[in-house]
Amino acid sequence: MSLGERFRGLLDLCRPVNAVAAGVLTLIGAFVAGHPLTAAAGTAFVVTVLATAGGNAINDYFDRNLDAVNAPTRPLPRGAVSAITALAFSGVLFVLAGIVALTLPSLAFAIVVFNVVLLAAYTTLFKGLPGAGNALVAYLGGSTFLFGAAAVGRPLAGVVLFGLAALSTFAREVVKDVEDLEGDREEGLHTLPIAIGPRRALAAAAVVLAVAVLASPVPYLTGTFGSAYLAVVVPADAVMAYAAIRSFVDPTAAQSVLKYGMFLAAAAFVVGRAFV
Image: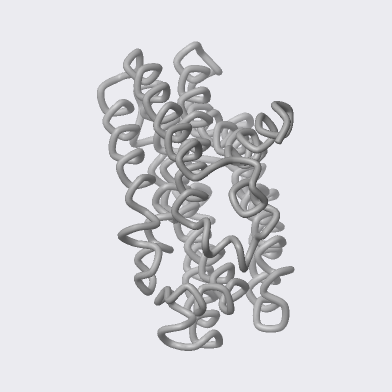
């Protein structure tokens, strides 16, 4: 194995697109809180990227046997990175995230510490529990917005976005579990689709997503944002509603569509804040 292939393996462990996307969501949280992109927001971006990359790496470490079935091209199954290297690499990323976060307000630092603990515990304690793993990932996804708002000293301004993001993330994670049903069964995991059946799990995801869609006009109805927000969030709701329906036919395509709907919903908050 060449040095270049090992480096590529470490980079793949981070899922850099995923990590940077999480960092962007943190910036959105800071912006929605009513602050320009200050140094604190930039620091929060770096922390989120490092912590997310560390979470992705440790997830690959614990999921290496499962990935041999569901994702054989991941770094560990293909032999680009050893298991011990992946574990050590994740630890380094977590420590770096904590060190950088020391410059942020105490609540923001506390969120980082709490999230790192959850990221490290996710696969071993929560992933195989019906709904629990989905709820944890949903919290972590939504907390990027909350963390961004806390980093600039206005955590309450990120609460609504956090809640809506957590609901839609929960739905997407359930759909992904339906997609991974075969590999999860072989690994002995007890995910929601395995516990109650794939169609019931998809129905539960659709209900949770419906709650998020119905709640999405709240910032407009309370006067926090104006019609510009509504103009963007309505198409986002339509995309997510379509994804919920599509999931009963093609879960793989549905979870991809749902991801774009979630990003569009986040954009609605940016537009809403920009045109207040």
